[in-house]
Image 1 (tube, one colour):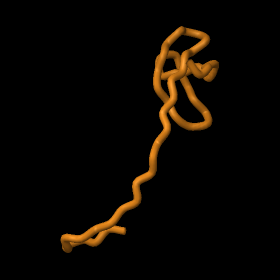
Image 2: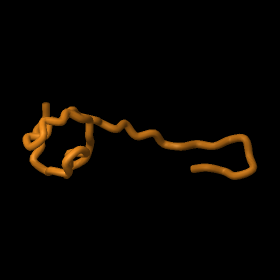
Image 3: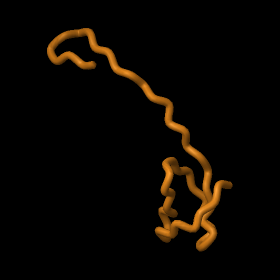
Length: 50
């Protein structure tokens, strides 16, 4: 919750888990998160956790 104009505010922080992946098509290694990971270089969905 945020308050505008005041000095007090609260917010919830959620931990984000980033994992390392490797593209089986172009060999690019990258960090990603989520259920449907796509290679940022070639846009392939053929990726595996490294």
